[in-house]
Amino acid sequence: MVKELVFNYSYAAPFVRQSEIEMLAPYVAEAHRQLHEKTGPGSSFLGWLDLPQSLDRAELDRIKEAAQRIQDQAEALIVVGIGGSYLGSRAVIAALTHSFYNLLGREKRRTPQIFFAGHAISSKYLRELLEVIGEKDFAVNVISKSGTTTEPAIAFRILRELLKERYGVEGARERIYVTADASSGALRSMAEAEGYTSFVIPRNIGGRYSVLTPVGLLPIAAAGIDLDALLAGAAAAQSWYSRPVLEENGAYQYAALRNIFYRKGKTIEVLVNYEPSLYFLCEWWKQLFGESEGKDQKGIFPASVNFTTDLHSLGQFMQEGTRSIFATTVWVDQAGVDLLVPADAKDSDGLNYLAGRSLSEVNRKAFEGTVLAHTDGGVPNLVVELPELSPYYLGALLYFFQKACALSGYLLGVNPFDQPGVEMYKRNMFALLDKPGFAAQRAELEKRLK
Ligand code: PA5
Image (cartoon, rainbow, N blue to C red; front, top):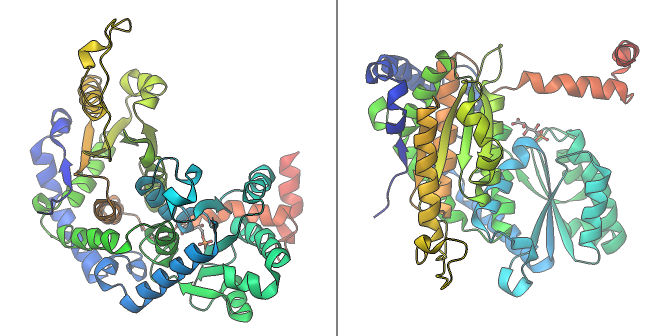
């Protein structure tokens, strides 16, 4: 039988009274109403809300066909994008493929190596990526909703030239896959003019909520991940987290507790994982919550740690540093195969007390020990538990966080679907680079740099 995700806030009991949670119930109900009736701030960006259940099946088939073509034609796929046009697919692929996916032989891997570009402006990164690509057959999926973002545009220009050099204009066309807005932006115009295979990012879905659109789905499918299972999990979560009542809705409970902690001075939330393959899930989550809530001089700063690795670096600060942190752990019961600690006749390392026990058990005890230590140290701990690390439950988890984030933004009194602050650096960078139309600010900015 399919289990639901478990949102467990029992460890946070010393930091919050049940009555505080109950007092938020009417506000949660109102936020729920605004979300579902599409009357709250940013309501023209709620396309993600029903997406898992309403996704156009014909479009899904096109995505699968394109993924199959990429698998047949390329040894490597380079996914070009940044922010919401990049983090979702990276998170899902990292979570659900082999930890050393790109290093496996093709026979074992079966699907192309997946590389990412256009998420930084680094010559070193791009040059070295091209070195790794070498003579390999490769394809490119360039993703940009605005179609004008500088980082992916630069990477795409370089890769496009390389594709043309290697395969000619027609060959390049066959290896370029565009994911962009339906009609606006340079990328869409280019796709139309050049005849690239292209996919549409629905206008009513913002970047950080777009992982279950072609933005995320094409690279995820090219990596051989079961899209139907991912979407089935998200669709199940859509039902679970549409329940209007706080006590029946784990995503709303999570949002409510975040709000309570924030008002008690816990201004930093640390998302914790105990599984290295969830590193990029945390990066995705940071963008989701950071861009959605950090505005109007408000918001919880989203950070993340990878335990037990970071128990040996940031663990000290979390345990005893400034008391402004609460933690949320994404716990996965089974992340795949398990290893047992072997016995050793000499026991010279003193580890025989663990002989025959699984690494999962040791990891679980590390998690439990940490939660209890944090609680003693004044750090409230919330836990989201997945029965297994599978496409189904990852799909459910993505939806859980999206729904919680939207509701949390409404409880905070911000528009969780815009990102006005992201434009500031761009304007300055364009002026400093002499981009046409930005010259007026240049002199003033340069004076400030000296
Ligand atoms: O969530 C967002 O809206 C942003 O992070 C965008 O996804 C990011 O800036 C990339 O934008 P675009 O897809 O227009 O290139």
